[in-house]
Length: 469
Image (cartoon, rainbow, N blue to C red):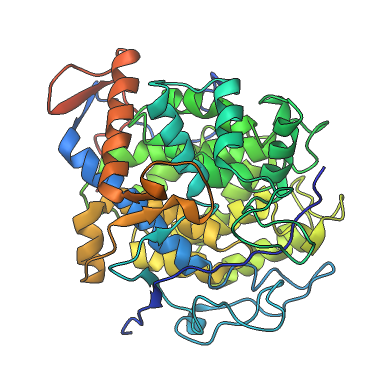
């Protein structure tokens, strides 16, 4: 079995830096306090608006992913075998990047400074591990005309579209001598198990996969929330097997939290979202977390600090002390002596993502900035919330946010293989595919009306009628 890979090399043509001025069957927990709401019977969404939202998802996720890569693993704390000193603060935005734990003494090759990273207009966005498996799952759903993927469809898709580290790949070798295939931790182990004939969800079980509690499912499954707008129950059913392909226990619960958040985002398409909207979404997603598990306690810890008026840096530092150093609330990072003291772990990155979610208060730029500066696997929370807020803003909203246009294509062959059009896919095509899948899912489950230009989604989880938007 392939050992844990610790090197990441990010090389992409046409990337520039622009400086800114200035089925589970799971039900919500009965013991968690959530906003009371008078439940509307329908959520009406224009298909044209949803296509713009899906475009905004892919674009917003790509911007945030590449911005977060600049600081990925620069700051992971001062405990364990890797000590990286003081964390970044807001004052570090626009300042020189410092080397990551695998940077060999040099800053990121994407940017000398910590700032937003954009693809050149005539170059595609490059796929990365925060976008490529989600793209693969969307493609598999489209190819199979499916509303849920089977274990064999998942395995066959992984083996067809992902390189093995044991074969010659276009990306050269990493420092350990393996061919680079842009898989790490639990994803890599699950892939190796698939090569041996093991099917999901066995590929994510602790007895088979020692990295089952790592970050991987958070990177690969949020998109299922968009295929069931306003219906987290259906989204979780669709995402269940993909999540358990690489995760188990609390790591799976964390991935489900993000799926719920993405499903709830359909309530806000094309609207301005503020802190009350973000807290409503997050509290609703929190209600799906088992109260006895550490993710629920992490959520409560971060939200409490946010509501008590601490700065985001103070809350991030408290997360570091409470969970990484002191290992409170049943959360452990060092018991398996994981490289860099568990900085790839699902939990610490979940807590970090909550810091950027709450303190970003629905503002795309601010949320991505905080996620980029917060530490650990910074490109993951940045991509997650950048994708969700990009979905809410849509293509035109993102262009207005940055007062510019963007590259309109995506290069999936930067990290994966065997896709159409030599791997260079228009974002518009990706968005249209997502709408077709959503349409099929809603109709197959008989929860959407049959209007040609819109969906009337039945029994959604929607905002309370007295919610102050």
